[in-house]
Amino acid sequence: MEQRLSLVTLGVTDLDRSRRFYEALGWRGQEVEETVFFQAGGLALVLWGRDRLARDCGLDSDRGSGFGGIVLAHNTRSAQEVDALLAAARQAGGTVTKPAGPTSYGGYAGCFADPDGHLWEIAHNPGFPLAADGSLTLPDFGTP
Image (cartoon, rainbow, N blue to C red; front, side, top):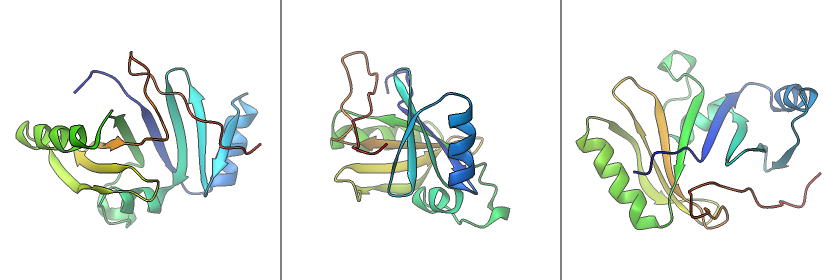
C-alpha cells in the first residue's frame, strides 16, 4: 500500500450546514448526489451523511455502534489492487467491514477497520485518476 491518503470523508448530520461552514472558511466545493467534494491539495475532503457513510462501510448506522464519523480512503490504480490491499489489511490484523465489490459510480471498493477501529475505504474510481505521485485531482462535476 502506498503511503498516502486520497480522500477523507466526514460523516455529517446536516450537509447544508457543514457545507456552509467550510465555505465560510474560504473552501469551495462541488455537490453531487448529496455529497460535497472539496479539493484539498493532492487529496479531497468529502462531506456525506453520517448514517449513509456508516452503511457504506458495512457498519450499523446506529449511533451506539462506535462509528467515529470519519473514513480515510486510499484510491488505487486498478480493481485488482483493491482486493490485494484488503487481503493485506486482514493479514496485518485489520477487519474487513465491507468486502470489495462494484460501486454505484462504476468503480470497485471495499472497507476495513484497523486494530483500533479506524475505517479505511480502498477504492478504484476511474473518475478520479491518480497522478504518478498518487495525488488525486477532483474532476469538474459541472456544479457551482
